[in-house]
Amino acid sequence: FFSSRRRHTRSLCDWSSDVCSSDLGERDPDHVRSPAQEALAQYGRDALAAYGWEAQAGMVAEECGELIVALSQYRRGRVGLAAVAEEAADVAIMLASVEAHLGARYAVAVAQKLARARKRLDEHARKDNR
Image 1 (cartoon, rainbow, N blue to C red):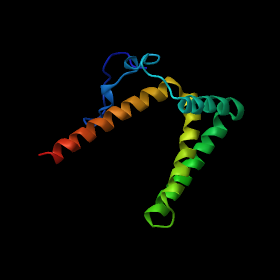
Image 2: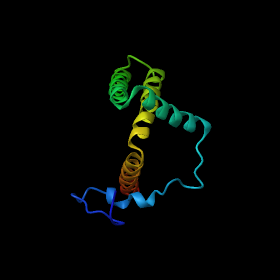
Image 3: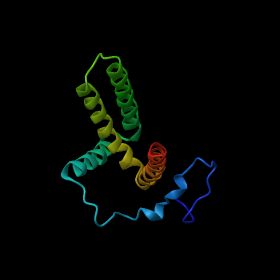
Image 4: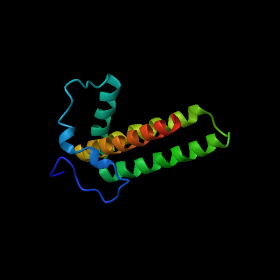
C-alpha cells in the first residue's frame, strides 16, 4: 500500500492523500457490524467462493446497468422509488463480492473517496453559508 503517511498526488484536486492504509487498521474496535451488514459481507465471500471473480464481476456490471436504467426511468417519471431501491439493493449485494475480492484495497479506496467527498461537501456547505 502506501509507504508513508502521506502519498504524492498527481493533481491539486486529488484529496485522496488525506487517508492512507495505516489509518484503517484491521478493524476499528468500536465498529460493530449489524447482523444485516455481516450477512451481506458473508454473502459476498460465499458468492465469490461459489462463482468466482469473473462471474461476479460480470454480475456487478449487469446490476449497475440495471440501476442506471431504473434511475433514468425514475427521472422520466416511468418508475417509482421502489424500483430504484430494488436495483440499488441488487448493486449493494453484488458489491459485497467486490469487497470480498479486493479486501484491504477496497477499504482503502472507499476511505480515500469518502474523505475526498466529505471535503467537497464541507467546502460546498461553507460556500452556501457565506
